[in-house]
Image (cartoon, rainbow, N blue to C red):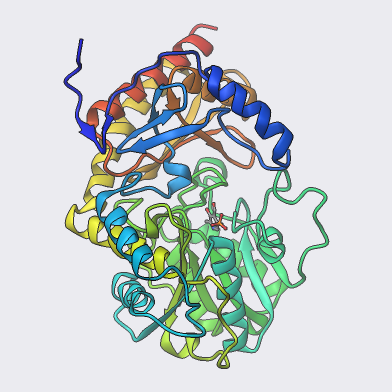
Length: 451
Ligand SMILES: Cc1ncc(COP(=O)(O)O)c(C=O)c1O
C-alpha cells in the first residue's frame, strides 16, 4: 500500500526499515571501509547513505532513518535543500575555484556581507572565510593576538573547539580528541564554566569565580581572547546560567581582551535565534561560524569588529580553499532559505515539541537528570537511577537502540552521558514525534522504572 507521507526530493518522509540496521549492503561496505579507511576515523552508525532529504536519510539497503543529528548540526536547511543545490550547480558550471587570494569573486564578498549583517551588533564589521570550524577558531585567535599584542587565550571546562593542534589544546575532553596527540600549544588557560545542573551557582556567581581566577592566574592585562561556546556543544549542550555570558563580556571589555563566541554549532538559527549570543543580548567582539552556514558544504567564517579584523597585516589571513566559490554559493542558498522560511522560529517550534515529551520520558524513567538546550539543540543528561552518577553505558545503549530502530541520534558530554538532538530545522512534526516515540521506547525497555 502506498503511504500518504510527504515526499521531499524523491525521498518519502517516513521511517521505514526493510532490513536490520545495518543491512547486508552496508555490512559489505563496512568491510571495505575497515580495509581502506584509518580506524582512527570513527562513525556513529555502521551504515552507508544513498540519499537524504528533509528529515530522512536513506541507506544503501533502502532503509529510511529519521535524522536527529543533521550531520552534527550542519544540514539545518535539510540535505540537498533546493536553493543550495541550484546555486551550487550554477556555480560549479561557472567556475569551481580560483583562490580568492589570487583572483576574487562576488560570492565571497556576499557571504561576508551577510555575516556582517546577521551577526549581533550594529558596529562596523569585517569577515574572513575558511573551510572548517577549527580553522576558523584558530584564525579568530590569531586575529585577537595580532590586535591585542597579547598571548593568553582563555577557554572553559567542557569546551570543544576542534581537532587541529591549537584547537585540541583549547578543547577540554582528552578522549578521544587529545589522547596521545600532544604536546599542545602554550598560553591556553581553562576556567570553570557555569553548569547550572551541576554547580548550583547563579550566572553572576559562576562568572565571579571564573573572573577571579583569570585575574589571579593570568592577569587581565595578558589576556588576548576569551573564547566560549554560548552553549557548550560536544561538552553536553550545557546552557550557562543567565548572567554568566554577559558578565564575561563585561570583563573582557574592561580588560581590553577580545571576546570570541564560538558559534560553530549554535549558529545559523539552530537555537531559535540567528545566533545563540542573542538569547542574552550579548554582542561578541568576534564570532566564529561554520557547520549550518552552508547547508553541507565546507565553509567557516570569522566575523568581528572592523578595527579588530583589520589589525592583521595584509596576507596574514587566508588559505587555498577558504571561501571556495561553491561553498559560498551553498551558504547564500542556505542563508536565503533560513530567511525565507524563518527557520529560527522553526527551531523554537521544535523545542516546544521536544521538551515536554522528553520531560515526560524523564518522569517515567527516573534516569534523566536534566532536559536542556535551546531551540533545535536539545539534550538529556542520563544518570544512574540510584547513585545519580553519569551513566555512559546506558546512554550508549539507548543510542544504539534508537539506531537499530531507525533514528539517528548522537551522544555527547564530558562524561559520555548526554543524548543530544540536532534535527534539521525543516523536519516535520510527524517525523519528530515518531523519533520521540522510539526514544521513549528505548528508555522504557532499557531503563524500566521500578528497577
Ligand atoms: C563549538 C565548535 N567549535 C568548533 C568545532 C570544529 O569544527 P570543525 O569540525 O568544522 O573543524 C566544532 C565541531 O563540532 C564545534 O562544535
